[in-house]
Length: 497
Image (tube, rainbow, N blue to C red; front, side):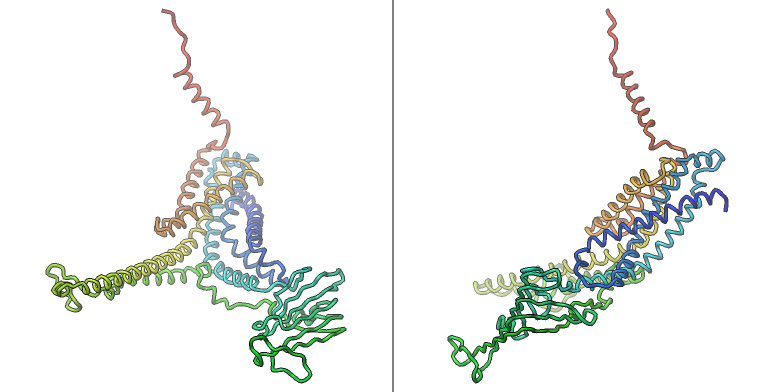
């Protein structure tokens, strides 16, 4: 390896590692902020959060690689141009394309890595990450009671506290205790206490509620008991009797399980249907199956629709269809008012059934085609995301040589603009495919095609040492136009006759 290649590679790898780390962190924070409401008040361990961050960091890698490639290559050649190293390279008879050769090979290697990552690692990370996120979202919040508001997340209880003190003491507690039958009869068990406290035991698996100086009210439906006070329900004498029981206590202790608050892992097989969880082989198989089902449904439309017709129509000399009633047999029957009414009723019913059948089949076909396009789009994106790393290098390296600015100023601004362009074109192509305006390959490769042509244009400008982004070039161009305009249409001196 020549010293020139080492110099260029050393100027590339530092910015690449830094920008890759920053971009992954930014995308990870964006995802975390989007799902922040699902994390708060959840009693999760550090290991759960570490796993979630790890999986989502892997998910962001295919998106971060093109941006990191663009920014680092632009910074590398921008620094070489800013410190006149690129000028020295050109003066030694080495072209810009030759200077770009080592990074071009690196870009090809990163594209291959990105393709393997998209096809193998990303589906696995998506499956693990989103299944874990679903489990976190469905996990109940920890037991947090607010003053004066009923807390109903603890199964079987509704708890209200007038005031929570700093030492953990709860003042003015009201507890409605529900059983399976009490949901039908209303609030049949109520506990009032002057004070109390709540804490968990056995690694947060059980909740202990201790109450002080209170009363326990219980209402039980039954037939009555000796010595118990009861009231017969009005209107239904002797059928339902309410037993009221009141127990005063100085200290009352209850223990309840917190198993419903723990995170339960869902079967990951429930998420494998999504296109993000499949590799290229699975996507191809699913898309082919959907398209075969689409074609088969189209072929069965006419045969299946014949069941909605009571009569057949004979056209010309076509005598191939022998079965069924023919329309000319109906015409031979004398038409009466009752027959007209029957014909109209049957025709209306048949047309309504046929319309319903057509609408349902149309919706079914559109859904099949949309799903097939969705899986095929994701399959193409496995390739387009990998190739975009190489395309971003073809944009970043010549732009750095033309701009001749290093650091995180101009390169970051230019990189963000081109990355937004890549993002917008990709989404627009996907939208046109889903709307049926473009076939899948054209929509999937739209962004890469446009940006590849842009990159080749920049490479050509860099080879000719173009001053594409220098202000003086455009000021001189505007000045030339003004001069030509003045010379042609400017004021002329009047010559006396």
